Amino acid sequence: MDDKDLAQRLYNMLDEALKSFEFISEGFLVQNKDMLEKGESQFIDILSKNLEFAEGIVREGKKNEVDEKFLTLIIPLQEIALAVRNLISKEKAILERNVIFSMKAVMEITELFNAMKKQFIDTKDYILTKNPALKESIANTKEKIIKMVDEYASMHQERLITGFFGVKASYLYLSLLGSFKTVAKELVDFSQMV
Image (cartoon, rainbow, N blue to C red; front, side, top):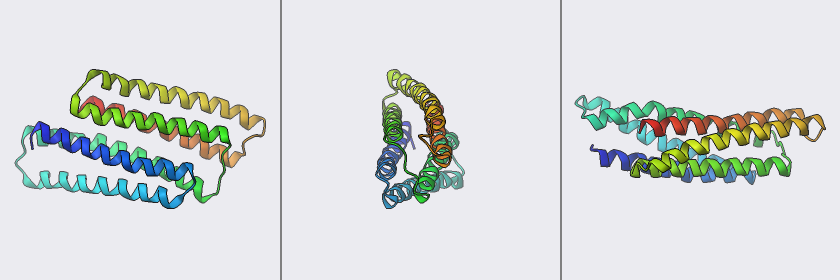
């Protein structure tokens, strides 16, 4: 594998992940568990294919510098995967418990999904172009997501105090917000290693 092959493999991986993320976000927002699970299944397939590829490199024994770089990226890729899987599990728990969020909360979650999609797009494009503006955008989007999450959590606290939100829904909402932060941080860490 050479540098161009590595960049293309990583780009394709994130492109496929972004497509599965569309199902994941849409499935959650329209409360369609089947759509959410389809996105999750696609996401798991992407991970499995690339782990098998990495295991093939390890089994070969003789590795070039690019092979070694790919192997060093496996851990940050796994961290992204764990963060996304955590987000999915929280979404599934919300759907399974038939928790209905307020329109305001749904709008906030939609804004977070949109910001995260932008961060995924910038990350995959950065892999191919190495454009420093994209790398900066990835970090800026992380900061934007963190700021949004903190702001939404604060507004949520007010809604909880006024009785607009139930305690069970509150815990799930805050847990979901935290997952967005984690995914955003992992994408930045990955982009800094590419």
